[in-house]
Length: 167
Ligand SMILES: Nc1nc2c(ncn2[C@@H]2O[C@H](COP(=O)(O)OP(=O)(O)OP(=O)(O)O)[C@@H](O)[C@H]2O)c(=O)[nH]1
Ligand SMILES: [Mg+2]
Image (cartoon, rainbow, N blue to C red; front, side, top):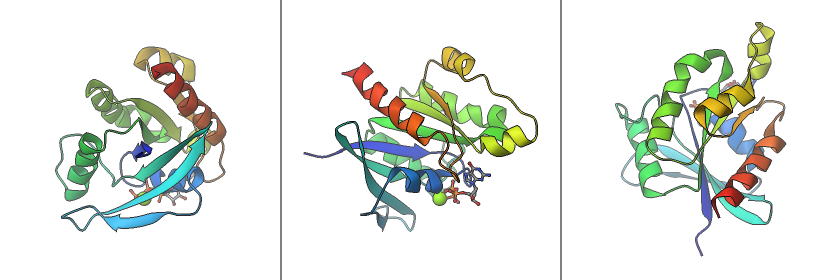
């Protein structure tokens, strides 16, 4: 049986690959998305008792694709029907980057929002009301630091809870 998929999406340079590495272990494969020169990494992770395929998608700013990378990311979301879509953004640019979160939610995708680089954001005095964001967006929200692993266990728990809520 095909594994359930977790797709990691977000703008370029927000920490997608570091998060991917934190979630996956060995057995990572990198291949060109069919018909393109865009590379997509795939790995595996076990959460609860379920094994998932984790996909590190090319950077995208919008669901309306302009670049080839964005087209691949969008097609991937449509064709591979992920069980969970992790939208990871740079917490320092939360307001600007929330536009993509809203697009993903409006497209009916099963979104979990990750505010990454909260170490840097807190360093410049920003604070985040996670519960308020969860209430407004009606999706799980987690603050992370992909470079140190902060928040990753909480993210795993949310993915597990998410699956349970849907069954
Ligand atoms: N301080 C801090 N730096 C981070 C964090 N997450 C990622 N970075 C840094 O951000 C940069 C980009 O990280 P990547 O994981 O390569 O980001 P990406 O989204 O995969 O980038 P592209 O694949 O180029 O779109 C690296 O220099 C990381 O060290 C974080 O939580 N805190
Ligand atoms: Mg990357």
